[in-house]
Length: 319
Image (cartoon, rainbow, N blue to C red; front, side):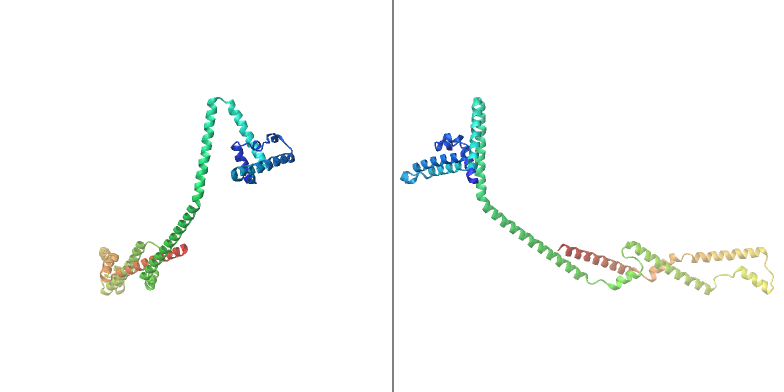
């Protein structure tokens, strides 16, 4: 059905008069479908007898005979005949309008129609060539796309395996975390996530303070044993009152109090700065550098273990 309609439109665009082909020009205006069909059938029988191979013999023209068959099919099909008539009428109207134009306008219109016709023909030829080559090209492109996809998958798999090997080597080289050093860092009371310099300074300050307090207690104990402190003037006065001895004069008592205060200030001055002396003695008696190095190593191992764990989780999530 669609082929007949398309063929009818093609015949009309070429300007082929099917009614004249069967010598039934008067049938163009017949509105009765049955009457029209009968007239076309009679005209076809006459034409078939004239161009049939049994009649023509060796002069039989198959293309001519097929053209009459196709023309008969178009005229006997209502839809195809309607398309043919509409196209023919439009072409005739355009021809009439062209005849009314001036020679210059007619030439311009002819050139335009010629270029449009050539463009359609060229497009049809190009489309036909593309259609012929498209099957082979499509198969080749699909094969290339499949090969590229397989190569990409293989490359991604090799990369993942290499990363997994590197991660395992790093974990094996790192070894298990040092539990003893980790517990030492925890027992020191310093949070693991704070600034390490601040933790080190705080630890050194506490050690120095405790050492200074210890040295101060030792110095005071030694001073008490050696009797370096002078007897208190108040104690002297109480003793004199109990033994009945005469009290010293007010001036001598004031002088004694001043001397006692001076000696006490000197003693306080000597013992007031244990921190500085202790800090010097701390470095000479006991070195805390190994402890700090162990703390730093423990912290570094803990950070590295955390980083490796996060990397392993990330790789597992990606895979």
